[in-house]
Length: 384
Image 1 (spheres, one colour):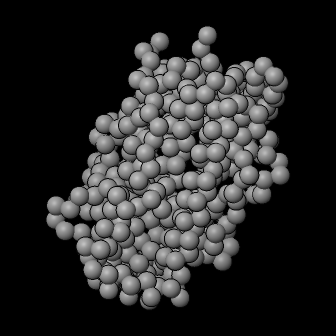
Image 2 (cartoon, helix red, strand yellow):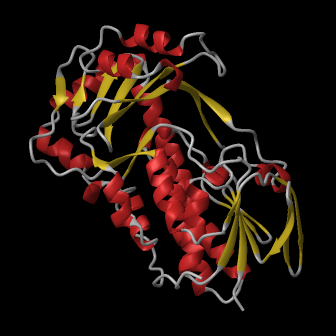
Image 3 (cartoon, rainbow, N blue to C red):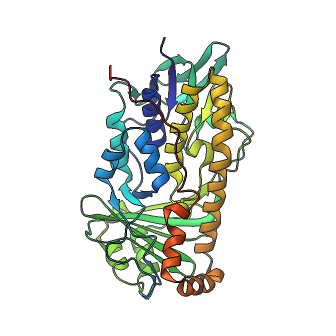
């Protein structure tokens, strides 16, 4: 008899989990509280570790078709336009940039038809020896396992981890946008107290993000586009042009937060995945990638262990150290790149580092996070 899991959340992590379950012969129901499926946000990049995980899910080729190589980690600049490091023509790049909605669509199209339910907000979870029941707006379902992939403000975590600390503000805020500007190679501009990231994404567009410090969360402006334009108005081209080309209503302003390290990702037959387990600062570009990794590791454990309980112990032991270390590193990276006090020292260090050494330092083969390799999943089962 086929096992059945309920996946709470229909974002990138939830769909990755459903697809991973499909590959090991499980059935899944994805409960998404929104009335329509989609991915909120702008752009992102995925590193080799996440691309390997997508390969195990059987969608690497489709993901590469909607992504764009980005040289953001090799083109380091100062606000006046000087290059601290510059990618050479023909340089290989390890990073692939996406619009979040494009990668979400790739995963959704690979999940079996009928597995996703919208307008299904979870309100209750009950466990017994035989399984887990989930109450939601449309009724109740019972399954062998519940996977909570419902984000940084997870309802499941609140219900079953009531003592978990609330998400914490990291003293940083970010403006994000998508501009119809083609042909940019990607770059990272280090300013005193903030940085501006550019990634090319598919269909002749560029994603940008300006990250800086903030005294408190929740500070908003009547005209967010004008606010960010004023802050970076004297920075080098094409930064002002990217902001100007972005529709005012499409400029996103978010505060950067993280989830404190949890002592376990497992409660009985309920397991946390992605931001519900380890929401982190975006400064290493690993948030979505770690959720994709989670999905593959969880499915491999379920396929390889004799019981669900043993599989969840294996998953927890594998994922907590890695994801929590990645979150700590992302927080430290963000602190360094938005510290006005550290700016001069950082710029000097990068300028004095020979380009070959810098490229080696950011190459996948020398980056512990990027070197990760996923466990193997079986070939996908036929669609029903």
